[in-house]
Image (cartoon, rainbow over all chains, first blue to last red):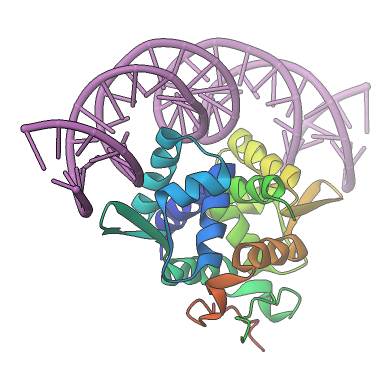
Amino acid sequence: MDTKSAVTLLSSIAQEARLDIFRLLVQAGTSGLSAGVIGERLGIPNSTLSFHLKELSYAGLIHSRQESRFVYYSANYDAMNTLLEYLTQNCCAGEQVCCPDVTCETV
Amino acid sequence: MDTKSAVTLLSSIAQEARLDIFRLLVQAGTSGLSAGVIGERLGIPNSTLSFHLKELSYAGLIHSRQESRFVYYSANYDAMNTLLEYLTQNCCAGEQVCCPDVTCETV
DNA sequence: ACAATATTTCTATATTTATGGAAATATAGT
DNA sequence: ACTATATTTCCATAAATATAGAAATATTGT
């Protein structure tokens, strides 16, 4: 990952509506949620939502798939992890003061 | 952490120069680097650098301390970790597909 | 007080980004 | 083909952000 790609990913979630959308999808799991459900849950108008979903998709932080009349959006966990690893790469010069506690919870 | 705080933190690193600065400081460890050294390493003009350092400071992602004529900047690892945890909170609905590999490297 | 070095503020300009109503497009059932 | 539902595009407007030269402000040593 290079700086530009990382900035693209970060910019895509450095905005209130988009961060809400992304976290909702992160929590929703691989099946994702339809655009309509996302908009309803977060109270975002159609056109605004569409704009933000496009931003997140372009950045590569979410995937979309068409399913009948609905478009389902889901988090791209690989992209998320690559970003987190980029941010913490070679962190704290071996001082062990940075250690993030980011673990996948077992069911 | 709430959405707004997270957006502030993310916005502060969703910019090429600032992401470079932040990663440099993350890798520099707790002692940090002086503004001059940062600017020299990254090739950023004084005024531009100062603007970006202020952004990162306001966001709370870096600390600064005066030491004689120099101002040393260092990463705020706590803020970084809080942010990463916020992003991955309750992730992937227990499907175990998200697990980021963000571990502190032992020396 | 002066000179040298380090950093910040001021300023103007340029660029990017967010918003949501209305219209257009897509999909599926009848 | 028609209707209903879902989503996206178009558009104009509003707001926020990045850039760097020049000047101003620290800080330290002589």
